[in-house]
Length: 90
Image 1 (cartoon, rainbow, N blue to C red):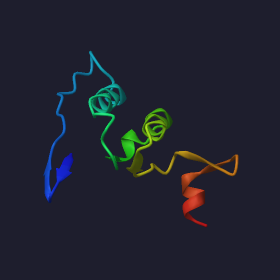
Image 2: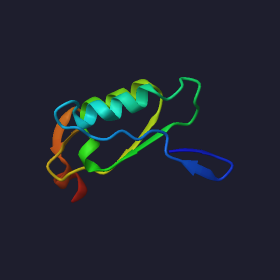
Image 3: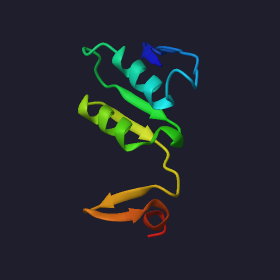
Image 4: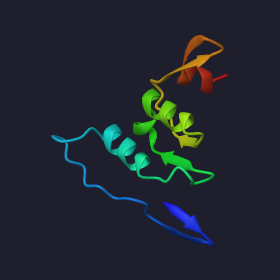
């Protein structure tokens, strides 16, 4: 979505064809289409897209990532691997 002055529109839509692209590949292709001059880019995803490769790609561009995490994901908490479910129960 792109927004300005209170109006928001989808930035890009691509049908997912399993035999041609991975879902992460489609997401990265969409990110490649965003002009580098864009400021304050926030990438909002569901928990399926909260993969290390995509998050690193977003952060390397200086953007912000917002997404849910599945309970079976593992976080590095001070270089110590910790399952999300354990972290959430603290």
